[in-house]
Amino acid sequence: MKVRITLALIASLISFSGYAATDEQRFKACQAKLIKANESGALQDIGWTPPSEPKVLVGEIFFKLPIDVKEGFVQTINCFLSAAQVGMCVDFDVRSGLTGKPVGRFAKCHFEMN
Image (cartoon, rainbow, N blue to C red; front, side, top):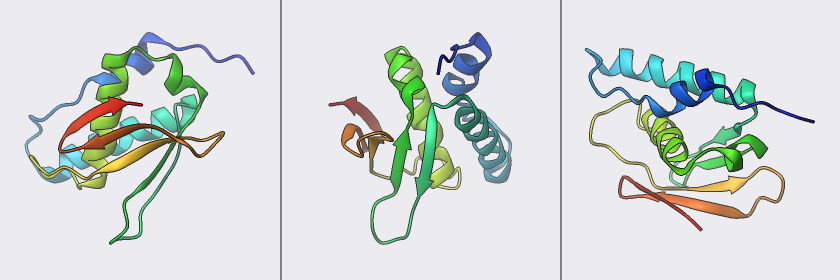
């Protein structure tokens, strides 16, 4: 399967807006970006049953994104998981949807690839 990375996808993943008027508006904006990411194949699944860490599976497109776009993408996932509460960070591994193995980690509001 051949998938094209569009400028619209990149813009939607990297443009994390911390300036929405309310947490609810920020949450809806993050949710909309994740829906686009899921439709594009960059995101495969998010699951979370506290107190365990969230399960984040990424697709093939994620690996083709530039690092700054990956960081924006992971920040958007954090926004969604934290219900858009400014300054809150949820720690989680980013795992390959194909292998289930960790490919990166978001911890203390910072993302690093393995």
